[in-house]
Picture 1 (cartoon, rainbow, N blue to C red):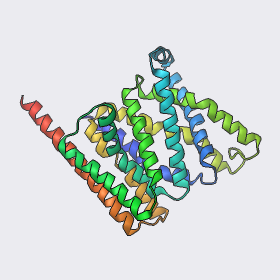
Picture 2 (picture 1 turned 30 degrees about the vertical axis):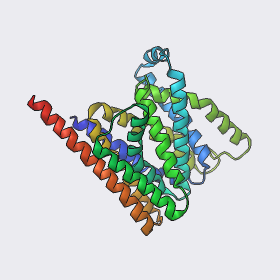
Picture 3 (picture 1 turned 180 degrees about the vertical axis):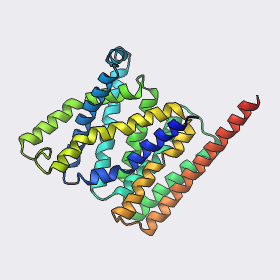
Length: 297
C-alpha cells in the first residue's frame, strides 16, 4: 500500500473538509452564480492541465467511445446539482446538515450498488444501512421535515459515484468533459447577470473576485488528488479516509460558525456515526481476513 497514496487521500479530504470556510467568504454572492463560476474556472484549469500533460490526442480518442456523451451529460447535471445544494447549504447557515449528507453518502452508495450493480451485501452490512436510515427517519420525525439538503447531497453524489464507476473515461478526462458540457449554460448565465448589472465578479471587492477566479483550482485539485489516491490504496482505506471531510465540515459548523447542535441532532447523528463505525470495522476485518487467507495460500 502506497504511503504517498494515503497522503493524497488525506490531502483531498482535508481540502473538502475546509470548503465551508471558502464558500462562507463568498456568502455575498448568490449560490447559482458561485456554482457557474466554479464550472468556468474549473474548465479553464483542467484544459491547462490537459495541454501541459499533452493528453489532448488521448482525450479525442476516448471521446469516440460509445455511451460517453449520455453518461457524462447525466454526470455533469448531478455534479452541478450537488455543488449548488452544497453551496446553498453552507451559505444559508446549514453546514452541519451538509456534513450529514456526506456522512450518509457511503452507506447510500452501498445501497445503490445493491440496486443497480447487483452487488451482494454481507449479512452484517445490512445493519449499518438500516441504522443510518433510522437516524434520518428520527431526525425527520423530530424536526417534522426532511433533512433535504443532506439527502440531496447524498443522493446526487451517490448517483454521480455510481456513474463514474461504470463510465469509460479516467478522472481527469471525465471531469474535463463534464465541465465542458456545463460550460455553455455557465457562460450564458454569467453573461446574463453581467448584462443585468448584478454580477459579483469584478464589481464587488477584489477579495471576492479573486476567490471566484481561484475556485476552479480549489475544485480540481482535491478531485485529482482523490483520483491518484484511488489508484494507489485499497478501497476500504479510501472509505475510512472519506470521513475526514464531513467531520471537518461538522466541526466547522459547530465550533466556528456556531450552528446549534441540539439534543435531537446529537441522537440522530450518533445513530448514523455508530452505523458508519460498524460498517468501517466490518469492512476492515473482512479485508484483513481475505489478505491473510491469500498470503497463506
